Structures are given as C-alpha cells and as structure tokens.
Image (cartoon, rainbow, N blue to C red; front, side, top):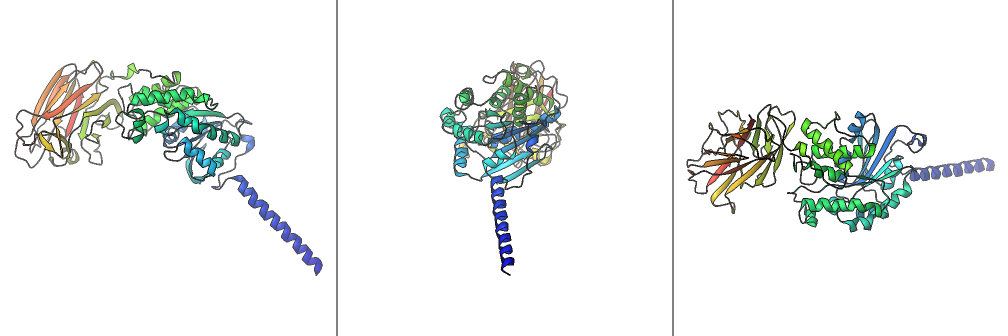
Length: 501
C-alpha cells in the first residue's frame, strides 16, 4: 500500500510541475488575445516569405495613414503586407513611454492580415504586438499638436525607441518616423494655438522636427505625409484634405497612404489604378502626384501648378445646397456649415465622383433658416430638403447678437480659359415684406443679379459668362438687394447651379 502512495505522490508532483510549466509558458508567450503564432522560419528577416510587415506605434493619425488604402495599393503592385497599428486616440510619445514603464495593457491593436482582413484586439500591451510578428518596419510618431515641438520628441522618443529595439525579433528591421500634417487653416483644435493658428508655421515646425529626428534616435526612414498633404493644398482642392480640421478625409487618407507606399517600396503611385471609393480621377491624381512630389522633396512644398484649374468644360451641371439637412440629396453637394472655413469638394449631378472643384465660405452667414418653400417649380428640380433650407444674413440690425452685412464663398479649381454660368435660388416662406437678395459674381469679369426671396417658389436668377480669375477662382458675394425693405435686412441663399460654356 505504501508503494502505491509513493507512486501517486510522484504523479502529483509531476502534474504540479507540468501545470506550473504550462502557466509560465503562457505568461511568457505574451499572447493573451490568441493570435496565431508566427513561424520563425517564415520571417522576412530569416527566410523571405515575400510578406512585408509594418507596425505603427501611434494614434488616430497612424489610423488615417495606414489602416485605409495602403494594403490595397500594395496589392495592386503584387506586394503582400501585414499592417499593425498600436492605437490610442491622441496618444503622445510621452504616453507611450509611460505605458512601457507601467507595462500597461491599454492599446487597441488593429491588424490587417495578409488576406486584407482587419481585426481589432483590445487591451493589449506594446510588447505583445512587437512580439506578434517579425516586423520589417516599425514606425513612431508624435501626437499632432506636439509634432512640431522638438523638445517633446527629445524627451520621450529615445525611451520608446530603445524599448522597441530591445523587443523586436527581426535583426534587419527598419525604423520609421511618420511626419504628420499641419492642421487646416480654419481648424479649431486647441493645439493649433501652439503654432499661432497658422498652418505654414505648424508645417515648418513639423519639417524642422522630421529633419532632426535622426539626431535623436537612429531611424532609417522618414515618411513625409505632412509634406504630401501640404503639397496637395497647393492644388485646386486647397484645404480639402481633412474632415474636421485635423483628421484626414478619404482624399487625405489616400494621399497619406500613397506617401507611405512610395516611401517604403520605392515605386511611384502616379497612374495607379486603385483609388479609394468616391474619389474622382482628378482627386486621385492630385493625391498620387502630391505623394510623389513629397517623396522627392520631403522637407519642402512643391507647387502643383498643373492641378490648379485647367480641368476643361463641365460635362454635367453642379448643384450646391446651402443647408445642414440630412441626408444629402442625390446629385447635390452640401455646404454643411454657414461659418467661414466651411467647404465642400464638389461632384457633378451624376454624383459619381469628384470633379476637381471645391467651394469654401470665406465670410460667414448669420445662421441657417429652415423656413423656405417646401414645394417648388424651377429648373433646379429641388427636393424639399434643399428648397426649405438656406443660409441667411442681416444687413440692418443685429439678429442673434450680430449683424452680417454680406457673406462670401469661393469656387476653386475652375478652368481659367472657360466661362461659367451661375444660377441662384433663395426662399423664405410666410413673409410679405421684400427680402431681395443680391448675388455678385466676380472673376476676371463681374456680374450680378437680384431676387426677391420672400415666398419664392418659382424664380431663379442667373449670372452668366463669368471667366475665373487667373488662379481659377470665382468669388460670390451675397447681400441685401436695393429693394430689400426687411427691418433686419434679411437675405437668403438656398441653392446654386454651376455650368460651363
């Protein structure tokens, strides 16, 4: 009997050792979200499997640049990539440094596999993602508001870099610094104050940092996404690369991805077929060329002189709605705010793709009015969501605490060798006084027309044969007409139609 107890006791010890060994192995694996284990024989740093592995340690700006379009661009060229993004919104290098010190499981690990499928793993430690693949490229970046402040990079990047370097598996890894972009000129981001709310001041500060970062840590590559966006802003699209003044819109994301692709793979994106959904050929060409120019000259803006307004005649009319109503009617462009700085990249009435024109409000309206005609009979064939909404101003006395004597918007990207016709509709239902509105159109020549918008549901006025200024722009001023007898001097703009001759 004693013999059997001894045998059982030995088995208990063996089982306990096996259990503890298993626990230790699981702890050592650092793989709490059950990612498939990589095969070391397949690493690109060892035997080349033809897969390029890219990891970014970043925030929403790395999300903008890497999580959309880069995989598809590489696929078109027959390159298979795996893309990882260690994401925390608004994460700074200082925050990454603190996370390392605290061994914090706080990242959203976004991973695009070799099949193009994007998966998200939450509450992940940084070392777990670094250990997950034998990365060919590892990227660092600073939070956007500090991206032009060298001292913030000096304070935290070395610690983050050295930690990653101690953990990476691939002895041939290349380290990347992601040069982010300056904010839109009208951005309300509080961090814009770091640069006196001046776009070029911010851009130049970012360039200064990206030129000096190799003196801080031995990065191998600078991806000049900031220069690509700034170069694109010299085109007819101007400041139309962001969705909120700092995060990129689809065009901006495509531009950044083109810059990453061309930098890493040394292949031009100019003329590539793939473009993100909704982009027109003009926008895609701007993005591709802006990226190419930036890679050639990563620390200076290249003027995109061939993309500033020689796009040829409009094949179809362009309809523009001035109001915040949703959803945007099919075939219409919407200017979604009445403040200066509001803008829209324009499509024609087919709604299929952008045509290289943009509209921006340069002098605000007072606000939005939703009391226009709901049923109209005009050549615009407007839905009620367009005809009932307008932006308005007031020339005679304060309304809502302000007087707005005139409002202005600019249409950019026009062909300076053509002339254009603009039709205007304004409406304010349920009023009997005369709320005449004057529309003044200026390019290299001028024209104007006036419309009584009171209870209007049938009338449109036109200003025809306006030639753009040499910069491809037409400016429209909206104000009260001479017959306006409204006590407040109210004027209105609901809709515009643009055609070319």
